[in-house]
Length: 306
Image 1 (cartoon, rainbow, N blue to C red):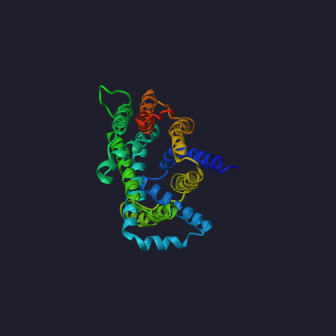
Image 2 (image 1 turned 60 degrees about the vertical axis):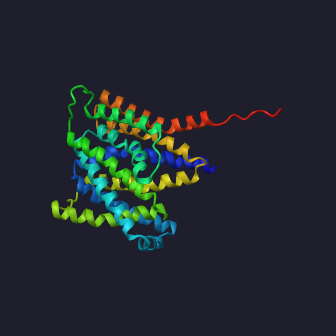
Image 3 (image 1 turned 120 degrees about the horizontal axis):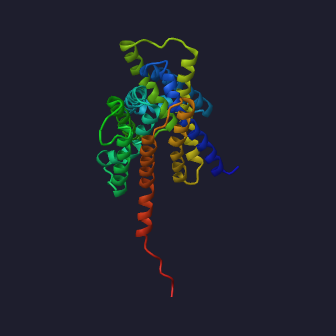
């Protein structure tokens, strides 16, 4: 099988798994508090990523990369998994899965906006256009379609969902400075973040009580939101002929997620979710397509030789 075909298989498997995690969040949160779920999922992910690195023969890189940049991994560990997943799971606990999913997906719009002041990148017209359209979609979803009343089902849940996009964007901006193996870096972030999660859990709540269904959902989140799926996606990117062709496949994820939410959680998908998510996906598409169209317009025509 060609490497490019293998890339699509790995990418589609990763997308399918990512599409199920919003549903898994809600199932797990019916048994665990957000902080307890973070603890179970991150612990699972550490074991899974450790086994992946053992299989790849890269365990020695864990100590090497950490000793080279301990303060860097302190930053990433605090952002992800500690703060990001705690805030995200609290948002899912307060909002219908369809709303939390759609609002969280705007991180891809926020990332280039934050890159302007933090990475000194130029702000493109496509970024502004995408942001305006996407956050109109956010407003439609957050108000459940009652945009003239400005009535929120859960103002706190909406704020937390949007805060999660800020934390996730900051995590990726910090990661632009990382030159190490990406799987090792993710594992180190989780290893550094776990003590903060554990201490906070012991001080504010209690350790999760054993329940087979609850732990199965938590382990599923750890494997397929945080751990194994990330590795599959990296393999897909490495095998792909064009990275851009892989990134466009991500647009399938929220659509499939809504399907799983309706099917498994039995949530009635509201018209405002369809409209808002449609606006967000349109914004993401424009963010990628407009710069390419501008380059084609400005590309000088090649005159035929006389």
